[in-house]
Length: 383
Ligand SMILES: *Cc1c(COP(=O)(O)O)cnc(C)c1O
Picture: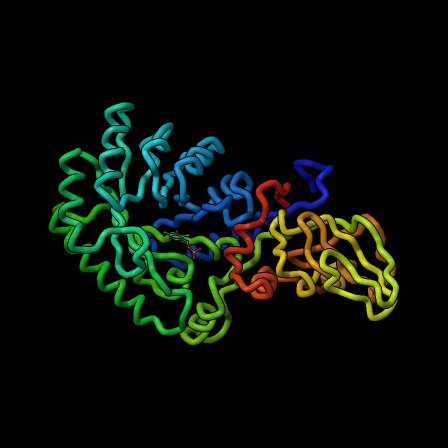
């Protein structure tokens, strides 16, 4: 195994085989007329854009990001695949984009900026119009589509795609609202068909939950994020899946393992307190591992006195508050712990496993947020 920086006191291991396994699972699942778009926004959900992109490009046909800068980074990493920029792009961010950089557009202002980029550079950026079907986030309502298509054609901008996004598909096992949104999207597609005479090539509305549960959301491009990294979008999605399918489940393999080393060993007497705020007091003579990871790295402060880490294949409770760069774990019941022992924060060690879902739920958030907050400064290595 090689690390970018062998001095790193903590590191993230990316399991390339698991990544390929998950992507191939989606490649096989989605319709053969649909392309697979790997969503790599937020530093590839915390996994590290520069590690994920070259590997994922072996299977994924598209990448999806939030910002134009992320799209430029992907281009520098090499693969010359189409990239969908899904977030708001201000005019100052329109530079160094080529005709394989697709923009999702929700306003006539954006169309003007894109038209002026073309006048400046000669580059004709392909655009996808976003339709709001009920998320009230990005997109225009169905009845505003004709006007937006008019201004696109006046400025001779190529509309190559139409997109929407579900509001609550991963939050529930009742999917009526998703069906309402899908129906509105179909109405939008009829409007588009009337405006353009034929549908543009890229029609997309999905996310991991949609791609796992509803084949009719594939259209011609399936946008898969959290599940390409080996995670279910939610327990509800998993439950919905198993209510529909008996037998073997979708076997997603988590891609990321977060590791560090025991930095110091502390002996604590009965009655002594530990850490900031003195929130934990030893009820017996205790042995603590001092671990060089904290909330600045993405180990949520709310895991103080709640989380656990793995050392020598055993589980050790986090005691006291999580500090900015340090946390303490009780290893009294784990024999022979010493400075330099490997610590697993997320992932497996021996028979034990800490899943990111466990840490997310203990810190009252979701796996998406926990992963996305892992500091980009942590060294990532392919294993
Ligand atoms: C993030 C995102 C996705 C991916 O969602 P997952 O639930 O992670 O699969 C898809 N589409 C859009 C527009 C997104 O912003």
